[in-house]
Image (cartoon, rainbow, N blue to C red; front, side, top):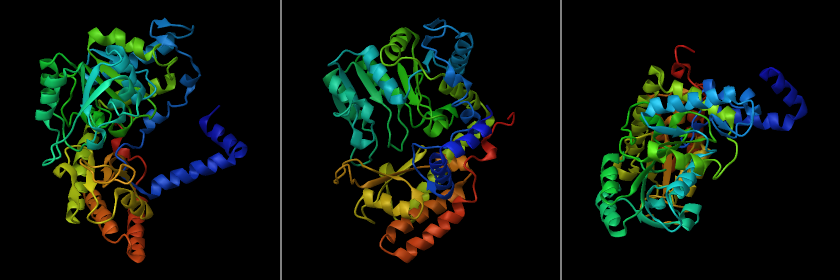
Length: 426
């Protein structure tokens, strides 16, 4: 059945769902999306999600399946693995985990025993819940010690990391963040881990697309294990995780994913990722990665123009975290004000936050989605200034209405995916 025919049938069978889908398309088209963990998936990738590969059960690994008819499935998965290994120059790759967090749990189960000590970044300082937050599986199963950022610089305190590593002798050190705007010194983390006999695990979910584009340093030479999602800066499909590791850990990692945590993988998503990895090798993608960085700095400069304080003093990556408490009471209120004018961002704790996590003091913003739409430095700087103007005037309805009109006029001028980022071969 042709895809367009299926959509026509669905519009007759389920008009409610089609209506919601059309409204979501319009919402994305007419708003300014600054969610750092969101992006617009490449059309080359999207055409394989839900494709014929969705019909195939491929439980197991290539050459070791538990069902018949997997000769072509094996080739698809091997293609994804080979491209991933080439892209990141890693020894082994697993593309089966259903999400990056599932992959992270598999990694912990593969190389640690319950009660082992992990040294990881404090969630409120920019870490991730799967790195040992007390309410998460990782925090309940393992003894977790947290490092953070220095109060003066709001950058990772490597002296503290080294001291805690020597004091607690962790079996694993985790680095990688969800709201940290600066580069991480992977070489220094590797040296600290080696000095105490710990494994170094890097969660690269936010910055992996920038590494793939070659615009920031790679952790692969220093880490024993690297994990990531495939959206965010990667610009691929949601709902998928990848794991890169040294060859000696390959068997443990693979067994921890399947059958340790999940059954059959989703083959259409693996096929989509195979296209993504090839796309990341193109000149267009490398230009895209550079533009993501340039756009984030322009966004930060626009915020500075309006007197906003940037956490850690700025950004080296795709995201910016701002302390909004000089302009509005909380990050929660800032998020609501920005959404009212068509800017989609999220409230976020800042280091040493005086407010509780559900209200917090900061807002996290990122450049990937708008870069994918084709916006450049001029537009991103303007958006940064309008963020500040909206927060300065958060109780002035006429001023907010004017800002909303200006942002709407900007948003509708751009497609959801700019043609300039498509590979020339396509």
